[in-house]
Amino acid sequence: MGGAMLEGWLKLDLGTSRIAVLDPYISRQMVAICSARGVRVNPPVTDLYPAETLVLAIKPQSFETVAPGLADIVDARTLLMSIMAGKTIADIAARLPVKAIVRAMPNTPASVGRGITGAAASAAVSPEQRAMASALLQAIGSIEWVDREELINAVTAVSGSGPAYVFYLVECMAAAGVAAGLPEDIAMRLARATVEGSGELLFCDSRTSAQQLRVNVTSPGGTTAAALEVLMADDGLALLIERAILAAKRRAEELAG
Image (cartoon, rainbow, N blue to C red; front, side, top):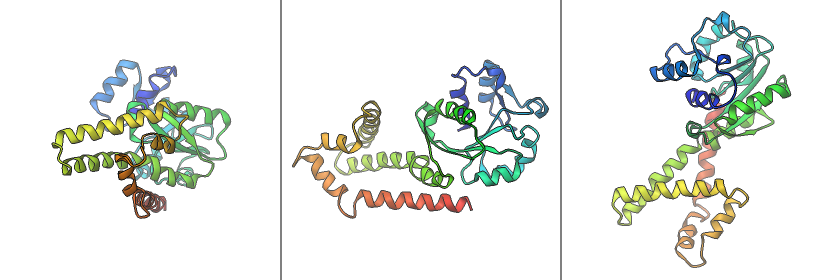
């Protein structure tokens, strides 16, 4: 995710000399990208103090290990933006001398510039810092601000984990196509293209609700109506999706302690 974000930032007019990447296990591919664009890789931390903005794109279990070193490059003026799952604003503030903290939850379509990120800000984040966070996150897609940090758990359940739900839908549609008699490869291509195209239609026709788009494709008494009768039964897809998202939300809450 950090690499996807960096790719997006390099398309902005930030000035690559202002960007540095700290990663003790950086890949050769990322080193090549940084070298080609003049981005510093693992410079002395003394060269970075005080960082205007620090983005924590690390695994949450690594935070305790790296926090002492990061404390040397931040101060009370630094905007810290975290995409660590489960680590709260309070967790971060307890270990680093920062007050302006944005907790964000992007999703994997960020790697193709089509992500959606939910974000929450601490009270110390200034309007200018909020605008900076928005600009950095919009480089990889869209952003939705929530006014309470605890809502990030619901964001995680809906959009953070959501791509996996969509990919599984494609798997299920393809498997059902095979059950209906289609060759496996054709069934998968049909399922993938249907989800890709439907997503693009949602994006391009944003003024039309998802509900209305569904109605538009459903002829009374037709094949789509027959399928939706199954999906929209009292124990159908809506209940299953609700159970899934609430399960993901509960797990996010457990991870946050």
